[in-house]
Image (cartoon, rainbow, N blue to C red; front, side):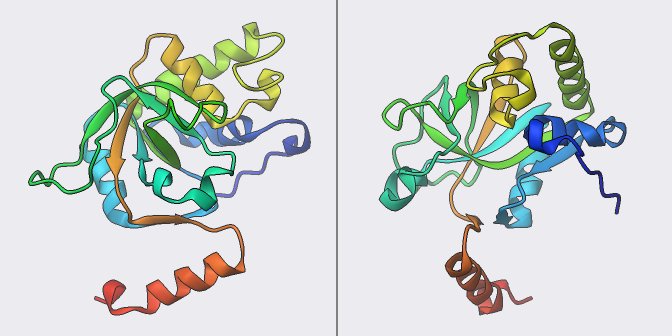
Length: 199
C-alpha cells in the first residue's frame, strides 16, 4: 500500500488530494470516499459496465428524510430515475449524468452520488487531461467552488461532463452506508457480524 499525503489540504480540497496520487492512476482507478462502507459487488458492477467513468448512484435518499438536510452530492441524469425498486430485470440500470453537485435541488435530482466511482485507463487519461488544463487556465470560481483550488470531486466531474466527455451513473440500491458518527459505526459492526455477511 502506498500512502499519498496532500500537504496543501488546508488550502485545497478533494480533487487536489486525488491528484497527489497521479503517478499511480494511469492504469485506471477506483475512487472511494473515506466515509463510506460498501459491498464488493458494487465494485464489480462498476467495472463490468465497460464505460470509462462510472459513478455509483442511489435514489433511496428520497426515503430518508433525516439525511436530506445534509449537503449531498446530487445527480441529474439524462434518462431520469427509476420510480420503483422492484423489477424482473437483475441488470443494474445505467444512466448518463448531466449534472452533479451539492447545489442541485432535491426536486430536480434523480440520484445521490455515493462517493464511489470507477475510472478506466481512458477515464484516468481524461481526468488527468482535464485536471492539468484546469490548473493552467481556470481563474476565479469553479462550478460550486470559490476557486479551482477549493474544487470538490463533484465540481471536477461536472467540468468533465461540460467538456463533452460521458460520465455514467450505475443505479444501485442498498449495499453501502456512510459513516458519520458512533451510531453509524455501531450499525455497521452489527451488520458485519450478522449471518448476512458470513461466508
